[in-house]
Length: 134
Image (cartoon, rainbow, N blue to C red; front, top):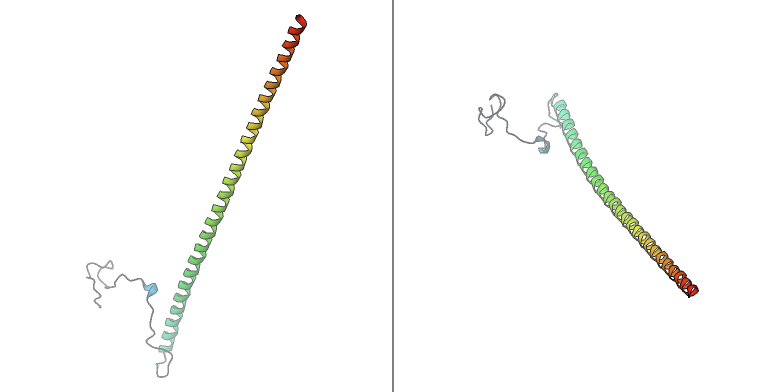
C-alpha cells in the first residue's frame, strides 16, 4: 500500500487506496517497457496497449483544443455579426425618425400656408364687401 499523503480515513474509498486528487489528463504516461530487443514476450503487448492509450489521450486533448478554438471563433464572429446588425437597426431607426420629422414639418408648413391663404382670401372678400357697400 502506497502512502501518497492522505490518511486512510480521509479517502472516499473506505481507506483501501491512498490516491491523491490529480488531473490525469495532463500527466504523460511513460513507457517503462518498450518494443526493444530483450523485452519479454508479453511486454510488447503491454507496451502496445500503453502506447494506444497515450495516443488516444493525446488525440482527445487535441480534439478538445480544436473544439474550444472553433467555439471561440464562432462566438467572436457571432458577436461581430450581432454588433453589425444592431448598428444597422439603429441607423434605420434614425432614418425613419428623420423621415417622420420631415413629414411632420412639411405637414405643419402646409397647414400654416393654407391658413394664411384662407385668411388673406377672407381679408380680400371683406375688403370687397366693404368697398361695394360704401
